[in-house]
Image (cartoon, rainbow, N blue to C red; front, side, top):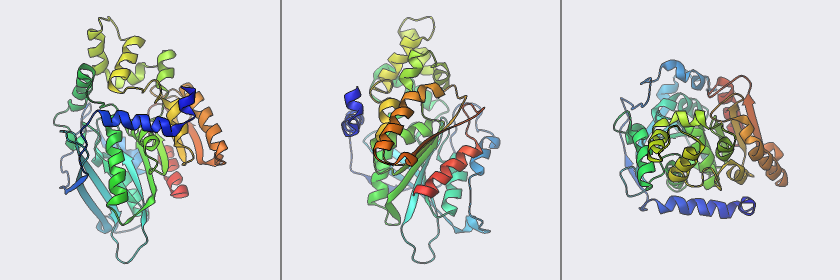
Length: 359
């Protein structure tokens, strides 16, 4: 494992092979789509109350009186593989170009569990107002890729039963690699060397793993999404993460003949639905592999889903790696005191400042 950790290119290639092994590839194809008027939200409460968006609405925004009139909205579908989930819905906001402008940086913004691309619209508008091309997608089994309020949980259970998909994190990372293909090969308005990625919770995990898998994501700022999966198992701190997608663990408990969910159940589920998540693709190996690209990890100090102690080794290794690249200032972890699993205005501002600084 240490040898793999010292060779991020090898680890990245192994991860890419894992992603390729679960799908039939197709040529990248772009189709126009229509705006979504009634977004799909899963879980409870549904839809989420507007108060849940307050942190996103605090994102720095240019002071433009007629901003909404100047925003250009694009809705497209990107075909990423030959499967029912191979149609990737994308929402893009940018400022109307009234005259020649240089190519612009882009920021990909990823939603949390049970939400959708429309949920992050406050962030899309804020970044677009400041000159970014702001991009959001529906992750696997979410938004337009869901047909019921239980689509995502059913997909997780199906993955446990059949082992043919990876709906927790990894399949969406494949989509994000294909999104990078689109942004770099089909968009003349984007500076291909200036693409950032961020997300909240599940979206933060997607941002982390997409940046590990694809170096075209040049600046990275996952919010409440980075944890040590192996550390959580070994230190009995897995409960909060398990509770966030409990149905698949309950199904596994029954199948394994257990009376309660325990660490063995947790490990077997991770190995089945996201192979390597709690071993060679865990944070101690994939976080340092993002170096030397700028990486800001924004967590809550009291987040039970992302226990801070579980990041000691990943952060230590990342600090050493960035130092070796002579870019120590390109990496930071901010753990906001007194905050659990919650996105805050301070996190939103830190991510915004990070992109303004490095993109």
